[in-house]
Amino acid sequence: MLRHRLFLGLLGATLAGCASTKYESRGLVLKVDRAASSVTVSHEAILGYMGAMVMPFEVRDPKSLDGVAPGDVVSFRLIPGKRETRIDRLKLVSAAGADAGLLMTPAVTALVKVGETVPDFTLVDQYEKPISLASFRGRVVVVSFIYSRCPLPDYCPRVVANLSDLRKRYPDRLGKDLVLLTVSFDPKYDTPDVLHNFAERYDANVPGWHFLSGSSEAIAAVCASFGIESWPDEGLITHTLQTAILDREGRLRASVEGRAFSGRQLADLVGTVLGPTP
Image (tube, rainbow, N blue to C red):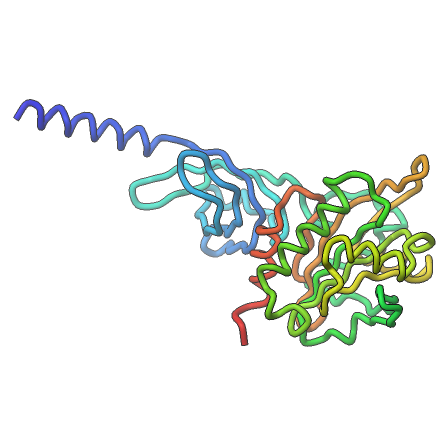
């Protein structure tokens, strides 16, 4: 009897300790439900608690969701409970475009906001074929930006690697109701032939994935729509990063700034716009 009581006492202490444990993590926001004070996050593995996955979490303070939108990268603190698990602290790591406090330079004054229709543009892909954004109405479009000479593996090559993960997640939808547009902001160097060779290195010359170039004026207009800034820097190009997701009506649904997210998280976010397979 004494051993049984000791066991129950130790078990109760263990459960109480677990209930008070707080876990730190970060992830990509997929959905915000302000009415329910909850946020759905594609999060990294939470050491000692759960693996990387997509989960909806209730937030303790509804005001912490102010300014949070799909595509934002957040850090958060999680407190497990007996009946529910809540976030008691949430912080933006990087926010998309208009909400990120960017300086109003000529490159961002034309920035399209979430929910707005992205202006049409026509560029040339790696096969020297004219590609217009409007031709993809009815499909989900992911727009990203790179330049082929980028020497830093955590920048442009990582953008392409994330898109490759997206391609692997939705192999039967790419080229059908999903399109990838990867725009070069170095058009003088990145000709269609150069982009074709660049895409070949990543096994990316596949239906539904277009690497785009064009005139300097056309590229500048597209970059302005998505808030991309770039400038020459000792023979290379310093630039911002942005990955945008457009819905089937051509509206901007989400925009992910920077590189603090994985290909898996990007695929989770795109899945919320794609919906189930028709």
